[in-house]
Length: 392
Ligand SMILES: *Cc1c(COP(=O)(O)O)cnc(C)c1O
Image (cartoon, rainbow, N blue to C red; front, side, top):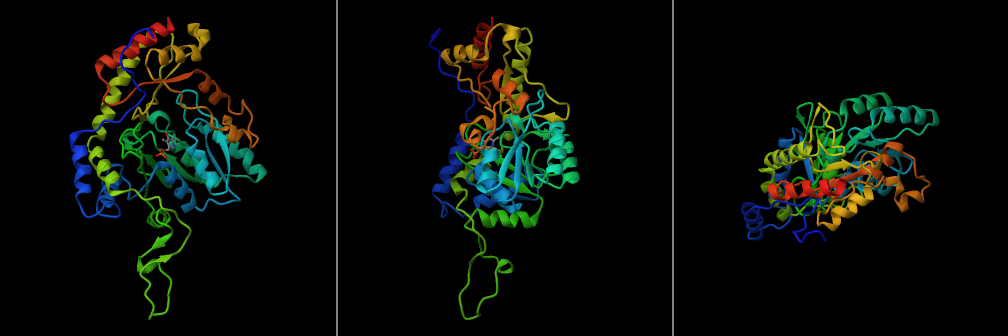
């Protein structure tokens, strides 16, 4: 160990006394689950991102699963997602019995490349294997080229679920991510490393009332108690609810929703602070032999992640060397992500190393360095100094 400073994680939550009080208030109230706070959080978040409907669930993973089901994804279908993402963006397709495939990234933004998508769609059309659902992922909080992906969805007839787990508070063409202007459903995560947190938790937002209704049913066993949803039954029997499909218990609790509602008030401030950290890094790394994350002019990132790219041909150090030096110095850097198809579980489906060349290059060069809203100037300074000495 070069020094014995505190450990700096790559991401962490910011919890205020007001957040704590909001959870305590729920603990003293009548409802710990299925009360008034979940709908309040849903409405506030949908309003924030200019969507018509919000459906709160237990995680982004469960939101992705029921979003796929609500869009009719089944065992004869294909789901495509980005090669560089968390495994959950692909697993949701497998939960539905569908097959999954991966689209290479744009090496500048690390997002699904619309040109690679188009080439793959042309090929799939000839083979009769077009996807039913495509899941673009707003990597690091930078929105994808949604206008291009949406245009392709019109041409090739697939549905779109935006995996915005990194991107609450981000903007695309000056509109909030989650407005679903270019997609059927957008999904957010509230895991503690993300922009705002509910401990575990997620939300699906949509402008389609019928889809929202399906999502509400699927998160709670496939049950509805809305008279217009229910089937006719003998008048002398009591039917105050019916199970209409096979759903799950994917509900969010009132405690989580209270934390989320309280955190939402500070979302813009959190994102602004992340921008301050990112700008500091951009400036500090200008003179170092390292690549900083390029930003598309249409994008206002939420900066969930700040990956630097270490090329041994440029700095003479390998990514792994730099990663190890930083970890050893107490800077908890990370790698987001290993290409999903390289995971042993996916390799067993037949995917081979090298399948998506830009994803592979990113995997072998990127290191996510710490960025979170409560990072002090001193912590940022230490990260910069440790990176400088690791590279030089
Ligand atoms: C975190 C994350 C998820 C899963 O979120 P959970 O709320 O932990 O289920 C899915 N996709 C991406 C891209 C993520 O970063």
